Image 1: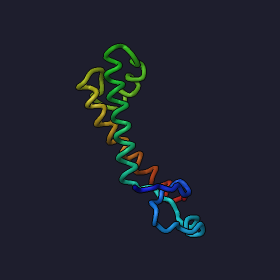
Image 2: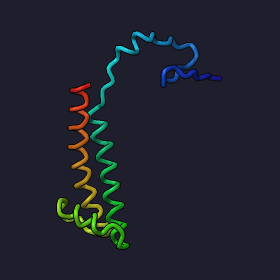
Image 3: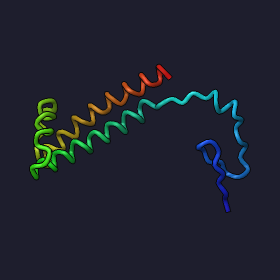
Length: 107
């Protein structure tokens, strides 16, 4: 049986050496730009696709029209949602990467 002991928001298995408080405080937490960019891109793409599906049922048309002025080919329905999701994924990749790089620069 493995027991897990909480330590400072981390979980250590029994037998592991607990890191010293001094060592833990000196560690700088950085974001991975690649992972952060992918996660933001995926979230943006899912949201834009769902908005296109909702707009095909006359929900969120005003928001879709605003986004449609930026994303070429984006319209209500599945095909328009896929086109908008591709645009949003690219937009999210760029935005997520820039946010992570700027965060790492100032942290």
